[in-house]
Length: 179
Image (cartoon, rainbow, N blue to C red; front, side):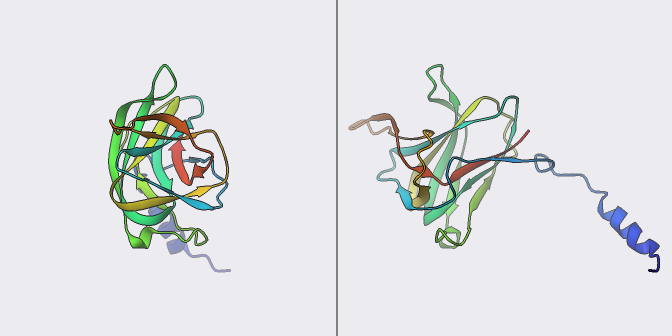
């Protein structure tokens, strides 16, 4: 086999770039679902919020991406909350908006996932609460039958407030972190 020094030089030159912040190295995907969509989570009003509790491994971790499997288009507001001393979601640490279009909607069998880049957020440790709330349209998220004990529903409607209510299904919402 003839030697090709230009090929080696090309390979070495391709490896000379600096990695983007928060995107290099190992990643861990925290998930409570079984990956088998069996229904959808809808948001009856803009007051209802779906909340998932993610317990991070020991130490500080960079949040990389929020993954979800959408079953209907619309706009969701996401929020990351600190944990209170009573082990519930507390003050908002970070928030943003997810605009789910028809092309982001999964059939549940196509492997299509929507993700939001969180790598610019500060590193976290302990427990992270992630809330999702409808802000426009009729968005929906796939759910699985798994009852992981980490999923809750609440409402801030003054006429019928609802504290954290455990839900026996788990939404296909995942959190990617880097140690």
